[in-house]
Structures are given as structure tokens and as C-alpha cells.
Length: 233
Length: 245
Ligand SMILES: Nc1ncnc2c1ncn2[C@@H]1O[C@H](COP(=O)(O)OP(=O)(O)O)[C@@H](O)[C@H]1O
Ligand SMILES: [Mg+2]
Image 1 (cartoon, protein in one colour):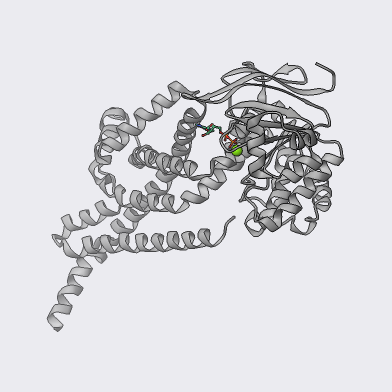
Image 2: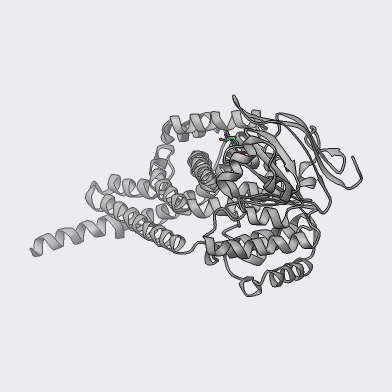
């Protein structure tokens, strides 16, 4: 028993303490959170834009070209793996430019997330009673004004939990960032594994950190859902 | 067309695919008139009313509002909609806003009134319909009759030239019908121009200044309410009235 404890202690020291290796984990976590948060912000902006264009086109028949662009975007992004998108954006689009990898990852995951957010928001818009649009228009609001003041606030409320889930999915998806040699949380654990030849501790540590964040976020989403359901406004 | 004509509809047609919901409707609404529209379900009453403020786009025909054809292309319909208040069967209050916000958002955003002006007017209207104490309530906290009274005063906040009512009491529990009809009766007494689709025959007879009977997308008969109720000329009118009276 004592021997086992000693072994764990030695491995722990080698994995995390020696040469300040814990920094790979902490810095990696920082990168992961940075990429996730900014990507989701880009995703929300893009998603709202695309959803608005698509809904406006369906309702009014205008914005034909913009709608076609949006449809192509949705098809391509949702039809290819996020890792392939990341690699293409890094090696093909930014191929010859010296560029911060964090920014590349934010752009790639933001563009990817936007497609999923767009569909979430669109379903939210569709979930709002059509009578709301009619009431807004009958008061004299134009289409955009009715969307902004009357439909969108209700749509957003309906999809807030789904947007929270998208954040959780995105957090986990950023773990492929190592493919462009970005030192995120996953890559940090993997670097330690390479140094110490101990796979168990660094990788389990990484997994536990993801798990803790995801469980925490899921709790928040569940709480939010309950709050929203209990209030009609 | 006299100068008293507010709305004039000429040979209005509306098709939904193969279905002809309106087959050439012509009518006139003069200022101060309370036009009541009755008819069986599916006869095109809602479609007619919704065409008047272009919630439905007519397939053919003209809608002249103060002489201007609003169904013509390039007309700014939003400006005309501000002059036509609409009250729906399902109330369609904005659930994420308080009663006061429901009533003031359009005057503030569209008529560029200050918040104080808009709220002052809204509170005065709330007082008239006996709902001053509900200004800060949300629609989900109101009864059906209260919701519909709010929907009516919300439309009135825009100072419309005409009010359109599409079966305003049909979604209400019977005990709440009276309070809504009472508000509408007062508006009529004030001289408001109104077009009302309803199944409330008592209201139609007492408050209406003219009555339209519609069937299968056409106006079958029109006249003074008392004449139409007591001496219907058309057999279809007679049959309908025998069922509802
Ligand atoms: N948006 C629509 N799409 C297709 N058909 C419709 C639509 N709105 C109404 N209709 C049809 O048009 C006819 C007239 O409907 P409506 O004006 O609602 O009648 P009413 O209000 O007199 O009951 C009905 O046959 C109805 O099914
Ligand atoms: Mg109807």
C-alpha cells in the first residue's frame, strides 16, 4: 500500500511539479476557454445574422442572394468535420501568413458554431406565435422592427438553453486544436505525456477538468431552463 | 365617393392557391360608421378584414384609403397600418412586455412620442377601461377579458382612424364577453370608425350602423342591421340568421 502511494507521488511530481509542468495544464485551460468564449461570440453574431436573413427571405421573398450564400454556408459547415475546417483555415487560408494560432482557432470554431447557432435561432423564431408578427405589423412596425422588438426577444428566450448546450459542445470540440499545434488543454496534457511517458495522470487530469466545466455549465443551463419555464415573461 | 368615405374596396379578390377566399368584394366604410360583418365560418370575413390592412395581399382589386390605393406597389404600407388599429381573436399581446410597455412601444418607436407622453396617454386609456391597476402586469397574469381590453387600448394608443375587430370575443369565456363588448360600444358612441367581424348578433343590431352578410367569399346582402335581421331578402341570409338568432 505504501509502495503504491509512493509511486503515485513520484508520478505526480514528475507529471505536474517538475519543471513547473502544471503550467501546460493551466495555460492550456486558459487557451481552451479563450478560444471557446470568443468562438461562441462569433458564432452567436454569425448565427443571428444568418437566421435573420433566412427568416426574412422565407417571409418576404427578398434577400435572394444573401439567402443563397447562407444556405451554402450552412451546408458546407454542417457537412464537413470541424477538424477538417480548422486544418483548411490554418493551412490553406492562412497558409503562408504568420498568424496567431489562437485567432485562427477562434475564427474556425466561430464559423463552425455560427452554422449551428443559426439553426437554433431559426427554430426559436419559428417557435414564436405568428400572431406576434401580425400584431407588430398591424401596429405599423416594419418587418425588421417587429423582429427586433417583438419576435427576437421571445425567440431568444426560447433558445437560451439550446445556446448553452452549443457552448458545451463547442468547448469539447476545441480539443482538436492540437492539430494546428495550438497548446490548448488537451494538447497541454499530451505534451506532459510526451515528457514523462506517463499517460494516465495527465490525460485523466485533462478529462476531469473538461468534465468539471461541462457539469458546471450543464447545471447552469438546467437552472436557466427551470427559471425560464416558471416565468412567462 | 363622398368626402366622408374613409375606405373604399373595389372588386377585391383573394386566392389561396386554388381556393377563392374572396370573389370580388366591394364596399365602403364612411367616417363614424360601425360596419358589422357576419357570415358562416370560412366565408372570408377574416380574409376581408386582413386585406384591409394588407396582412393578406389581395390577388386583385383596389383598396382606397382616403382615396389612395394602398394595395398598389411601392406604397409605404407601414404608414397606413398606423392609421388602422387591429384587434385579433387571440389578443396577440406581447408576452415579454408589461401592459404599459405593450401600449407604449409603438407610439414611442413609430410616432416618436416621448415616454412620458406615451405613458400618460396609455394610463388615461387604461383608466377608461378600468384597468389602471394592471399597468405593470404581464399578459400571462390577465384574464381573457382583460387581455382583450388591453389589446383594444393598445391599438387606440396609435390614434387610428379606423379600428378593425376580428371576432374579438370568440376566444373568451362567456362571462367575459360583456366587458369587451361594452368597451367597443363606448368606442362606437364616441364616433369611432369601426369594422367588426362578430357572431354577437345583439351587438350587431344595437351598435352596428350597417351590416354585411358574407358567404363563400362574397357579400350576399347588406343594409341597416334592423332591416337585415327583421327582413332578410336573400335565402342564404335567412338560413344563416335562422341558425344563429
Ligand atoms: N393563409 C391561408 N392559407 C390558405 N387558406 C386560407 C388562409 N386563410 C384563410 N384561408 C381559407 O380561406 C377561406 C376563408 O377564410 P376566413 O377568411 O378565415 O373565413 P372566416 O373568417 O369567415 O371564417 C377558408 O376556406 C379558409 O380555409
Ligand atoms: Mg375568421
